[in-house]
Structures are given as structure tokens and as C-alpha cells.
Length: 436
Ligand code: MEV
Image 1: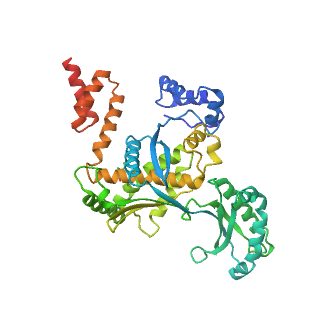
Image 2: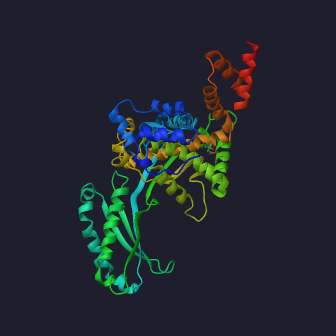
Image 3: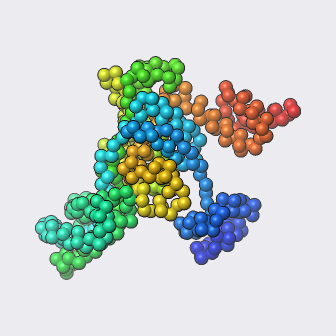
């Protein structure tokens, strides 16, 4: 059983691993497997070991390429980092399908991010509102140095508002601040500005006299980014929606596709899975480009609930014999700063994408999401999802069972027309081994 241990962080990597072997089920062989995944060159390795605390090793996840996503007439080879088999194949199939139908159209409608200083004050709210315009000015001045570089790049603080929230929580107010952060995700920049703005509040004599004192509860960016929005769609005549699957003609495919998407709009059980299929593509691109998945996932799910009910994020329009499939996502991403300057491969994945700016990366991620989602729905309403998944699933099982070449070949042939499960493959392999 693991004992209480103080000072783990003071140990070096080797000592930490020894401690883990002594206090867990990890064996010394298991421990040495960690070494296989360390970077061979010391400088490369220290990029990883200095990235987080209590570091013990690297955890590789495969990267693949969706070779041709056409967005606004420009072709991209898009790196996907994902542990899930079929994600790359599905997105690549949908992206290829749409290349011949005009590709993806995308636009970024705005890139504003927000943060808030949350504080309490038990004084007269009319006084606060009255003197706030002057305080706002001081807040802009107090952040001038912090925002200078960002302003030179066309960004900075665009708005500062006082919000009275005392009807929701006694004495509670917010300073709601809007930011433009250019190609940076901007989390550190936003948080530094908010803390400077909070300290302005503490220095206003009228707000900090006698019993009426400002109490800063917290100053933090909001990961909800409904004003940092990308739209992406594909469109074609219904009659050209052929050849995804031989069983359905264009009309039948479009009608069934719309029904499947409408179901995601009215039923939460389906909506969550539908949106997960969108995130299969979005997250794979964000991970490959060193962006913060937790932030985008939190924002995307909140956005899916913006009408008070969780819904699917994509929608179908069928009109005038046209099929249009559209997705709107609040995505705050960066192509400079943060991990993009530290992780040894992020600059390389950005190079594969020809160094997009943040807006273009939003469009690429959205197109990857729509491609993944289109592939999922198109399969679900035709052959079912397992047909495609099972091919990759079989390949994973064959890897796990460490088969020789002829066993592998024979299993692939045998399971080409049969349901795949770990037990079924195991049984089949023991059978053919018994026959030899
Ligand atoms: C699997 O990773 C994703 C799907 O479940 C998405 C969907 O059901 O739409 C296939």
C-alpha cells in the first residue's frame, strides 16, 4: 500500500521511479519501459522533464495526417494526435468526399475573450456606478505596460464594464473585461491584466474607507468564449450526395442524415455522443498544435447548452434541393506563446499546416470536427459504425496478441466478414495454432 510521503517533488526522476516501484505494483521491468520513451538527446528530454511537476516520463500518443482538407479553397495536410483508432481514417474519408463537392467553407466571426474580477463591496451601489467611469480610466492606465506589446499587434483590452450582481449574491460585483489577444491564446496575459485591474479597485479611497471595503474574491479569465467563434459548413446539391454508401441515393441519404442530426438536437443522450464525434477531430488538431483541450472542451459544452438545454453543435439545412451541414464552435486557440514555443513538435505540426494564424487554426480545427462528425453520421445511417471501427479494432487486438505474420494474415481474412471481439480473435488464434 502506498505510504504517506512528503518530499516526492524533491526527488530526481530515478528516485521517484524507485519510490513508485517500492510502493506500487509497477515492476522494475515496467520501470525500465519508461526509459524507452525518454527523448534520446538530453536537451530534448529536459523540455519534457521541466514542463510539469513530479515528472516521471513521457507518454507518447500517435500522430497521423488527414492528407487533404480543403478549406476556403486552400488545401491543408492536417496533423491529428489521437489514441482512438478510426478517427484519422474517418476524417480523411469525409474530407476526401467533400474535396469533390467544393470543400469546407469557414469563417471566424470574432475573437474576443473575456475575464472577470469577482469582488464584494457592501457600500452604496449608486456611488460605485457613479465613480466607475473614472476608475475604468485608471484601470486602462494601470494595464498600459502589460498591454503595450499586445496593442502593437492590434490587440489589448477593448472594454471594461462594471456588473452589479448583488441580486444574485449579496454585495457581489464583477469587472467584466474584454480582450483581443491576436495569435496567442492569451491566458497568462488576460490573468495578469485582471490582477492589475483588481489592485486598482483596492486603491480607490471612496471604496475602501471605514467598514466599506472591497474584497477581491478572484481575478481569472473565462474559458467560456462565445465571442471567439468559428463557423464551418459544407454544401452541395442533394443529388450529388451519392456514393457514400451504395444503399442510399442522394435524397434518402440527406433525409436520414437530417433526422440523425435533428435527434442530436432534441435528445441529450444522443447530443453528447454526437458532439464527442465532433471533438474527435477538433481535439486531435488542438492536441497536435499544443492547445488547451480542457479549456476548449469546457467552452464547447457550455455553448452546446446556451439555450438552457444541451444540444448537438451541428445542424442540417435542406432547401432548394441543397444539402448544407454546418457547425459553430467557440474555440480559443493560439499559434504563438504557451506550449507552442516549448514542445519540440508543435512548431513542426504548425509547419505542416504552413504556420496558420490563430483564426486559420480555428477554421482548420472546426473543419476537422465537421469532417469527423460527417463521417460518423454518414456511417451510422448506412453501414453502422462497427464496420469501419472493427477493422482498426482488429488491428489493435492483433498487436496485443503478438501474432506472427501468417497468423495475422489468416486472422485478417477470417474476420473480414465477421464480428470482431477480443475473445473471438483469441479463440480463432488458439484454434489455428491447435491445427498446426
Ligand atoms: C466515436 O468515437 C464517435 C461516434 O460515437 C460519434 C457519433 O456517434 O456521432 C461514432
